[in-house]
Amino acid sequence: MIDAISFTNGTLRYLDQRFLPLQENYVETRSHMEAIEAIKTLAVRGAPLIGVAAGYTVILGLQSYEGTKEEFPAYFDRLIADVEASRPTAVNLFFATAKLKDLFKAHYAALSLEALFAAMNAAAVEIHNDEIANCDNMSRHGVELIKQDLAETLKTRKLTVLTHCNTGTLATGGSGTALGVIKLAWQEGLIEKVITAESRPLLQGLRLTAWELEQEKIPFYSISDSSSAFLMQKGMIDFGIVGADRIASNGDTANKIGTCAHAISAYHHKIPFYIAAPVSTIDITIDNGTQIPIEERNGDELRTIFGTQVATPTTPVINYAFDVTPNQFINGIVTDKKAVTGNYSQELQKLFT
Ligand SMILES: CSC[C@H]1O[C@H](OP(=O)(O)O)[C@H](O)[C@@H]1O
Image (cartoon, rainbow, N blue to C red; front, side, top):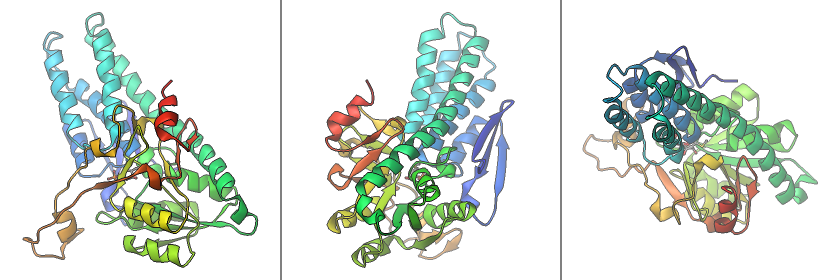
């Protein structure tokens, strides 16, 4: 399996995703500021992997601390704030920092800094291991849902599935969320081919999902984001499955920009459209998608393509990194605990009991 991220002997090692698939550059660092920059620049990306990286980034910050125990709370607050400022939408990042903040609150007074840091280090490793395990559970639940919902089609032929952005090993450290479901469905003989939307502007679909599918020898075609409606109209897509960066308690889902257009088109063409995400991506504290902070990124991501200027430097740009798909366009939310369908407000809440 691709080694997207690891933490060994106090050193964070990650595969810099900005240069894939043409260059496989691994980076090692012991600097939490460098790790934060890696998250900001999408060298490390993908909601679950951002959560894993956030945990390890805090550990790097702890390793750099040289002050007294009395001075530590102020340092820890700044460290957490810097990590949480790296990317605002993927709730997995805040899920990870919340775990570490809870450990601080519970144990700072009683433990030595050494013991507290050891407990936080163990928690960061647990977050990573959990995300890997989540993928396997999610994949199983997703395949069962596909077998159920597409049973009629499966009687006569295999399926063609649309996906968007990258939700595989590069986004999770495990087999993947949506792409993990796709990989298992392929292994079980359910999939004919994958249609991977390029995912402008940073092309996670064209670059990263295509690279993962090539590694897995799964047949696929890449398409421009704007092609999905036409392929659906021509009957070339049987279902869609994508990841998520934050899911509201009513099932409204934030995911890579372009997702909502695919979902609305799928709804119009009566094609099932699913979200696959670990429970750590669900923000049960918010009622609906309007409350999800949507990251706006530098307009140069559109004005240039990987260093080549394609628009004038003064071209005005609106560059939202994510959009929000209303729950009415989502046929099911596949999590590591179960596949949720029906009344999301009720059913998602049950995942936390
Ligand atoms: C496993 S879901 C990953 C999720 O994260 C991606 O965003 P980014 O590449 O900007 O980190 C995209 O929204 C994926 O769906």
